[in-house]
Structure formats: structure tokens, C-alpha cells
Image (cartoon, rainbow, N blue to C red; front, side, top):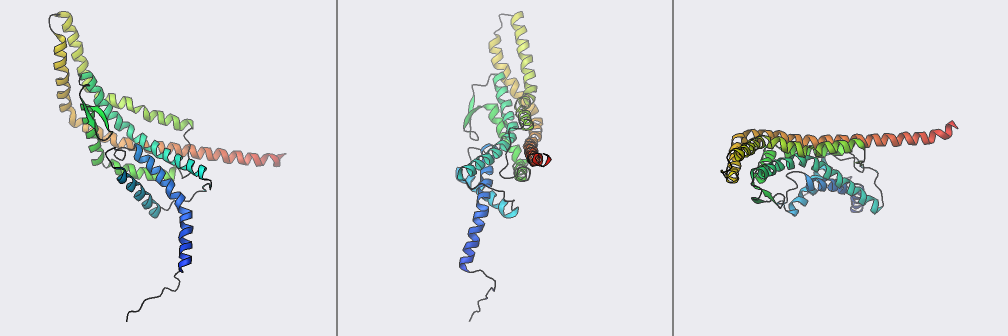
Length: 301
């Protein structure tokens, strides 16, 4: 006959249900705030925001990551409002934090694709468009090529893992329920990161653009010297061929640069998060000082 061990301090069924209910009341609101921030991340961050990822897979990933964070880190439970409307506003704020974090990381990725678009426009290949499954839009041939190369480099450089690690650090820098995007230092940093969309794309496309400019300049001189030469046909033949040859020559260097930009994208998100956290601390310090001054004035009088 088997002997069933008895746990002396085991709670009864009623107490266990009450304990579970109290834990749900305490941590469920925090869990949904974490889910909201993760949702914002998956809407904008490179690799995670790909339109080719099924919605069910994305939802499963969000819930799984939120549960893992809750079980391992056990974040501090902030003072949450009991009103549903105020709590919904907090969820929207958390989603915005995730969107901003992912957007800052995706700026450089978008700049790399924009470099390919610029090259196709200058080389006369802008009419050749291909379907991009990551964005569900039409993009130029070189833009699609750059986008796929960057995504591959981003994964092989473990950029998605660095991005997740940096994202979970946002809960330390920006506590749950805190949000401040109106601070001048936050807006200034956001503009600095967004401006990289232009100079990164020009930096990548510059070698080919210089050669194409030399071709245009040479064809312009040729047209003045020998008007009987059909410069238009030469232009259509020379510029696409030359741009493809140059891309083949510098492709290894471009891949190296893209790998560096992949890590820089993660650094931009971290920098933006630190600046937002600094703005929140400054705002809390200002409110604390105003609160002290408010109670100090009657004592002085």
C-alpha cells in the first residue's frame, strides 16, 4: 500500500485560490503594461516588425517574453490607477515607449534601404520595382537588395538579441507608468537620431554617386563637342552597367559597414532610452522640489 506524504503547511483549497487571486490582482496590471511595451517594440523594431511574421507568432512571442521577464526579473509594482481610462492611458504610453525604441533602431535600417533607392534613381533603374515581403510594399531592385543584405547581417551580428537585451533594460531606465517625451533633451536626441536617415544613406551611396556624376559630366561635355552622338542612348547603357560593376567591387566593404551600422542602431535605441530616463528623473526632481516649496512657504510665513 502506497503512503501519500502530507505537507503540514499546505494551504487549503480556499486559501490557495485567495492567494492566486491576490497575486493576479497585484501582477496582472503590471503584466499587461509589459505586454503593451513589447507590442510597441514589435511594431517598429527591425526583424521583429517584419510583415511576413504571422500575427499569431508575434502575439505568442510578446506574451512569452513578458512572462519570462515577470518570472525572472520580478519588476517593481508601481502605484497604478484603479480607473480603467487612466490605466488605458498608461498602456498607450508604454506602447509609445516601445514604438520609440523600435523606431530609433529602425532608422539606420531604413537609411540603408534608402541608399539603394537613391542609387536606382541616379542609375535610371527606378522603374524596376520588386515586392518587399518585409514591408509589404514595392521597392527598387537595389533597395530590396540592400534591405535583404542588412537584415541578414543584422541577424548574423546577433543584433536582434542585443536589441532585446537593450529593450529589457528600458524597464530600469524608464519605470513602468513613467513617460516624458515633451522634454527638450528628448526631442533634441530624437531629431539627431532621425537625421541619420539622410546622411547614412548618402554615405553608403556616395561612391557610386560620384562615378555617376562623372559619367553625367562627361556625357554633357561629349554632347557639346559632338552633337551628332546620341548621348541619351549612351546614358541608358553606361549608368546602370557602371553602377552594378561598382557595387560588385565595393560589396564586401558595404557589408562590413552595414554590420557596424547594425550595432549602431542598437546604440541609438539605448541612447534614446537613457535620455528619456534622464528627462523623467529631472521631472520627478522638479515635482519633488515644487512639493517641498509648497509646504515650506506656510512654515516660513
